[in-house]
Length: 176
Image (cartoon, rainbow, N blue to C red; front, side, top):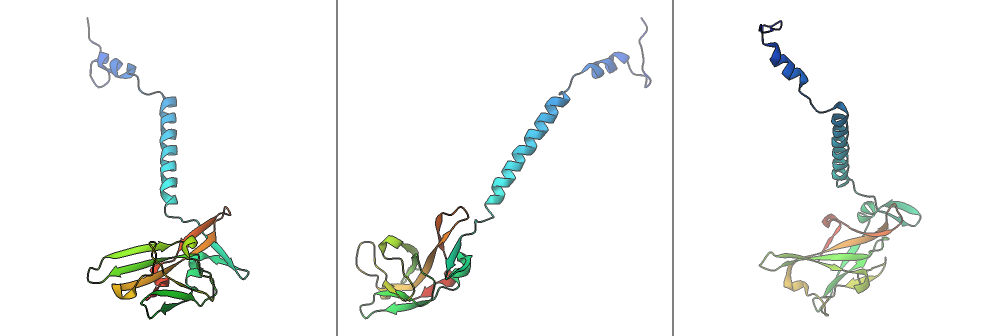
């Protein structure tokens, strides 16, 4: 029996083996590629949503801005009492919904932030003042701390119409 040889001089049985070998069908390959693209698209979409914040707006006196813009317009004045209690007076035209008190311990450098909720006297309308109270009762003593900052929290509306708190940055805080 004479062996067949192809153009390159190789055994033709080897070529038949390669030609007859089956691969993934084009339909299955296309479906897999489409699924991979869709999954990657969903992952990128979810990842990018972390970078884009929903704009929270506030309307004061017919003027609508983002709460971030109103944070720079918040104007507070420190109130210090003889008994070492402290607070602030809202001397601007932006109502403060709640506020954070950042305190740094004397000598320790340990920083702690306490949120004073709207329901616990944290809401301060323009022209009014508030003294910062402990949740256990009584007032904080500003001599017990190396640094005290009061950081306002504003209330605004989301695009969907719901209300949401917006904490201002420390740049907008007052030092006691």
